[in-house]
Length: 240
Ligand code: ATP
Image (cartoon, rainbow, N blue to C red):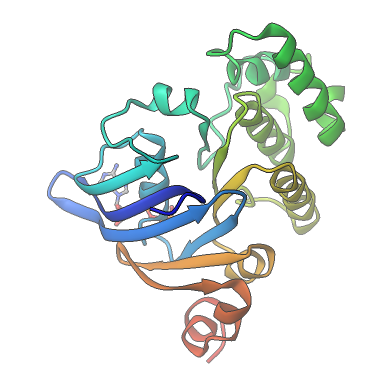
């Protein structure tokens, strides 16, 4: 693995019982990269993110993060090393307030002053969240909940942020807002792996992308190259 790599998957396999959902994939992210993982429903994208975050075990292959093999490391230890997941469906605690949800993200930190600094930075990035700090999170709109989920992940001070379909179920204008937030997080130096159903959006937004089909990576390259690829255009961009 080169020094500049933050994450490297080699032959990663993940199974649900006898069903192998991820069948030996290779994927790498350099420090500071913004990379998309696209593919049809059931291709194995969420499973891949969960294996990286440690919420699902790898059945084979290797996950290397910041130079070390982390296959056996539990999820909370990965989080402490800066590997944060914003799960599909957001994983918001609906009965807690926005502020309580955000602070959950900092539960393993001991630097109270740093947490407050990060809260302020997050508020300037997400003013809407600041306005609603005392609101019960379950009463927020879908877009606001997504922002809280991203804010919560940022409070762990991630170096690698795994985002699972942040645009899911949101109106186009709200999606634009969420993607602006993701762009500013990336500009702040956080490496990002983004799972996205909307292939067009993902390929325009990210520097590079991987395409998954039935548990395997079938294509990878720059967003521009994949946008021009006839197979991608036919399968994912609705063209014949
Ligand atoms: P989606 O966009 O629909 O979330 P995906 O690419 O993220 O799709 P996964 O959710 O990773 O795909 O699912 C990959 C495969 O694993 C699918 O065939 C799915 O049915 C299967 N799978 C996912 N979760 C489980 C589970 N808990 N138990 C058994 N099989 C599962």
